[in-house]
Image 1 (cartoon, rainbow, N blue to C red):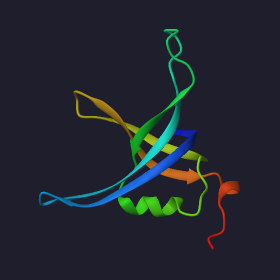
Image 2: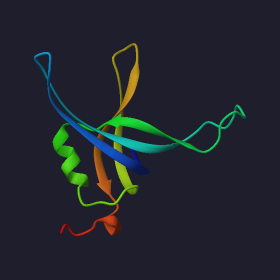
Image 3: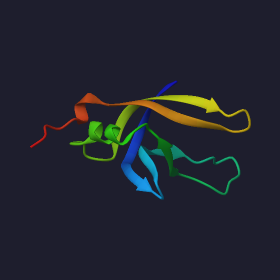
Image 4: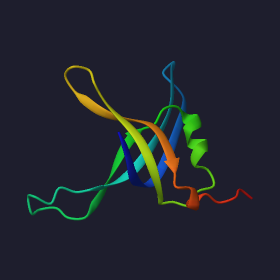
Length: 99
């Protein structure tokens, strides 16, 4: 599924801990809170995994927060489900030339 979202930030991680390698990029997406209970309003930020750390480079040169079209997929282990980001496409008008 594709959605236009506001990305408030991104973080890459790559290295090794206790002999196990890790390599990932996470994006932080502005998400509307559920106002039905009457105890919440506004927005929060939701963290999503977006592949390996080299995806972070695709966002360099952008001024956050940004608008982007995000392709997401819902996957399951059979017991639990999660949303995984497949691709992030920043809205072209926000891309700034790198100095």
